[in-house]
Image 1 (tube, rainbow, N blue to C red):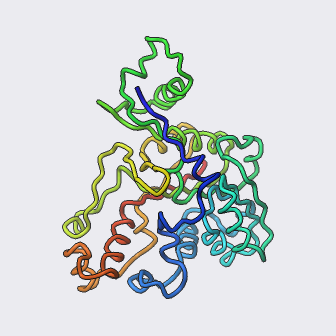
Image 2: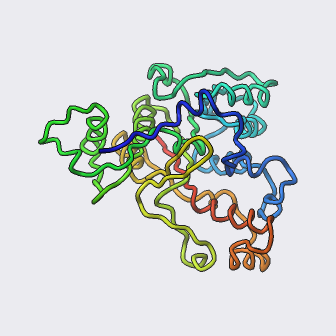
Length: 310
C-alpha cells in the first residue's frame, strides 16, 4: 500500500540537462546573472557557502573532501578557488553530470566515481574530512503513501523496505506522523552511512518540508511547510522535499552536533523597496521579477545542515 519513488533510472539513462530543475547553485552562475544583482555580496554560490562554512569548519585543515552529486561542478570549482590544497572526489550516479564535472574541474587534481552512493563501499568513506551533498537529497529514494499501521513491529514485517523504515523509527526514536505520510528513506540511509563512517564534517543542503520564514518577512515571503516530504514534479522524474528533523535525530545518535538554517543565512540579499514590491506582487511585474521572487522564496525553502562530529 505504498510506492517507492526512485530517480535512479532517470539520472543514469535519461538526464541530459539540469535546465529543467534550476538549482540555487546554478542560478548564481555565471557572473552577471540578474539574481546576483540583488545580493548583498555579488558572488557565486560556492564562494558564499565556503566563506560561511569557515565559521564552523576549519577549512584550512580540510584535505580530502567528497562531493556526492556534484551537478555541473560549479560548487567544487568555487571551493578549489578558495582552497587549492583540497583533494576532491566527485561521486555521481549520472554519467552525463560526471562528464560536466570533469570539464569544469579539468585543471585540478580530482578523482571521480560513477556509482550510486547508497551502494558505495562504506570503507571507502573512511578518511574523508568533509562531505558535501548540495541540493540532491531529494533525488534519493522516498517511500510514498506510508501509514503507521504498515510499521507495526508486532505484526511481523516481511517486506525488507518496510523493515528498513521501521529500523529508523525505532533506532533513532523518530516520531511517527499521523495518517498517510512520505519518508525520505534514501536520505536517512545516506546520513546513517556518513555518520557511521565518522566523517568529521558533513554539509547538507536541500528543499525542506519544515522550512520557515522569520516573523518580519512572513508578510512578503510566502512558503508552505507541511512537515511531510512533498512531491516536486520535474521532467522525467519526481523528487521529494526533505524532513531535516529526522536527519538531526540520526546525527545526534552518532554524537554529531548540528547547525541548521535557510540558505538565506549565507546568501544575503538587499531588501530594497524594489524587492519589497516584487515580493508583494508575487513577481507579476515581468519575467525578471518572477525569477527574483522565486529565487528569494527558494532561499528560505531550502535549508542547510552542517554536522560536526564531537
